[in-house]
Structure formats: structure tokens, C-alpha cells
Image (cartoon, rainbow, N blue to C red):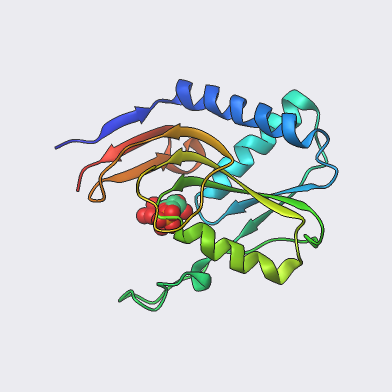
Length: 179
Ligand SMILES: O=P(O)(O)OC[C@H]1O[C@H](OP(=O)(O)OP(=O)(O)O)[C@H](O)[C@@H]1O
């Protein structure tokens, strides 16, 4: 069976603009808000959203960073291959800030649970929100939901939802890939 396109680049573009707009509606000037892309693939989404916030809303001073969760996952000792961590880059304190986590797919919720633990090293945020491009609803293992959501997708566990980004994969698209 071949992969199925769930979102094409035009649809992704429309959704990204809507998500950026929703963030502005809630966080206005982003004076007390920071954006954190979850490594690895949430970082591409975070960069895209930041670009829209800069170019269309003139918000050039938003604090942003990248958070690696590799060793904070509850299943990190279970794999057979040695794990390679990505880079964490947060050059500010999140104490009393509103933090917006950004990731491409929300599935079981385990990555975000790990991110909630990992961010503690950088202070105690006032609040944490979650923005995801794809919400694989009905697949959660934990009580974690997105505050801003691009598209809900019903996929069975054997299927994979893959988000491709132009800058990394040559195109913007979301695919449903049967296993
Ligand atoms: O809610 P969860 O169950 O934690 O799933 C969400 C995570 O899954 C994906 O990464 P994944 O580790 O699957 O990487 P992959 O796309 O390379 O398989 C995605 O980028 C999210 O970070």
C-alpha cells in the first residue's frame, strides 16, 4: 500500500498562518512568552511559525529555543541502538514565563511528558501550552492535549504520520504511511 497525502503544502501554509494568528490572539506582544521547538522535528515547525510572526506581525524579538528530550523519555533505555541526543539551545530562563511547546505530531503524549520534565532545568514557567501540527487523537497514553492544533488525524497504531519540511525533506507535506 502506498502512502497517502494528508496535507499538501498549500494546506500546511494555511494552517501555519492560522496557528500563528491564534498565538498572537493569546500572547499579543510575546513580552512574557517564549517559544520552544521540541527536537528534532518540532524545530522546523517552530522556525516556520516564528517566521510568520516576524514577517506578518512584526514580532522580531520573540525569545525562542530548542529542547532535546532524548534522555527524558520514559522508554529511553528500551531501544537496542545507542541513543544520540539532539541539541538543546535555550539561552534564557523560563522562570515565570509563558512557554509554548511546538512539535509536529502529538501521538501518545510521551514526548511532551518528557519535555515537561526537561524544561524544569531552565526554571519554573508560569504556564506551558502545546502547539502541534498534527493531533493523532484517540492514541494518547497520557492526559496531554494540544492548546493549538493544526489538524486532527485518525490513524491506527500501525500507521505512521510523517511531516516533511521543505528545508529538510525537499517538500512540505504530511503523509500517512502504512506499515
Ligand atoms: O506523542 P508521542 O508518541 O511521543 O509522539 C510524538 C513524537 O513522534 C514523532 O517523533 P518520532 O520519535 O516518532 O520520530 P520519527 O518521526 O523519526 O519516527 C514526532 O516528531 C513527535 O515528536
